Amino acid sequence: MERNRLFWGSRRGMLELDLILLPFLENIYPTLDQGDKERYWKLLEAEDQDLFAWFLHRHAPEDPDLKRIVDIVRANTGINAQ
Image (cartoon, rainbow, N blue to C red; front, side, top):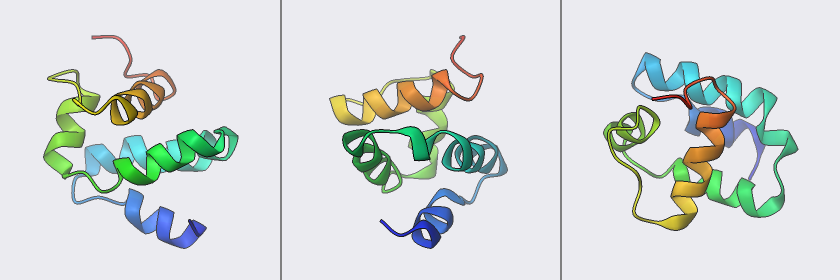
């Protein structure tokens, strides 16, 4: 997926999500393997409310691919601890 589309897909309607996703895109995304990059693309299709709930441990995605990338984002953005 082209970098510009990823940037705009990572910019969300919520500042809290921007503060999680944009640094992740800049610093961690380039180091992911192709499978995890594709999981990130899939993650960007989710609703903001779901992303916010997943990142803040309110609930976990049912989809194992989404759960994996949510866990990676949490582990690399300082929001892993509950």
